[in-house]
Image (cartoon, rainbow, N blue to C red):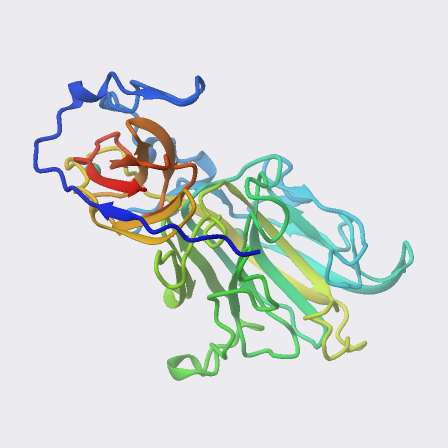
Length: 408
Ligand SMILES: [Ca+2]
Ligand SMILES: [Ca+2]
């Protein structure tokens, strides 16, 4: 289908005048459910700091670089996993990858010994399947948006194993998989014992390895040649914020996926990672990837041993001093009919930019965590006044970036 490209004249006007909050409070919204005046009022200073909210079971965890433990399971108890933290995902069916295991919550497949959680894959006939294992997740219990997510673990060995530490969206805000995203913090397949994989899957990048993770050897490269992920404990982590996801192995950054508004054109299709995600731990057997070279029948039982799982966040509310800088350098990437894709140079802040408020003709249209937005339904034969205001986590806002899009 061919759609006629309209020739438009675009004029950007950068505001030189001082931003005045009181002038904005009369702004109305398109929807009765949208906030109007609250956005412009400075958030009342919060007296509770994140450090005061550390769960008691996480209180012994050291705070490094401002990362405050907000959730953890150190597995300092015995029996099944803590039902206040994890649910089991029992059953079989292949899980979309032709996996061969049947997941159970039996102690044969999962137990906590006071120090470690051990997921054990067994070769046994069970409910029509030839292998059993366990999968646990925090779905329905806890989920997060942004932070540092870390596991310390020793991986199972043997051709046919496929352990994973990963995240899925709590709600499918952008549609079914892969549209709403998947974050694979750590994946490992037994037939490649010296490779660790970090991956995201999105609408545009959903292939077998997804996008942005490491598909090359990690453990055998460079200075990491002596590391053994199968017999030694290591930490596997991501740091996920409003605009990027970084993968770490024992604290060493090895992969990054970042929102880039220009290469290529990106929208929530490419960056669905502004929603809440939950954690998953599992040990699969076989499957399209893990079983690509078959399953060695002599490896069972094989064990995935986890020392801890921790979630950290940083306190961007307390002690925030500065307002975000004004967004600058607006550019229109593409205009089709009455649709414009607008990018800008990201604002800076002493903590973190939470979001940008996007106004079209003085009406609050939407928010975005990244420095690009697709605007549809612009007025034809008219100037469209675009205003973009950055906001940090303490509620401080920037001066507005203003632009005029004139569509003839
Ligand atoms: Ca432990
Ligand atoms: Ca700030």
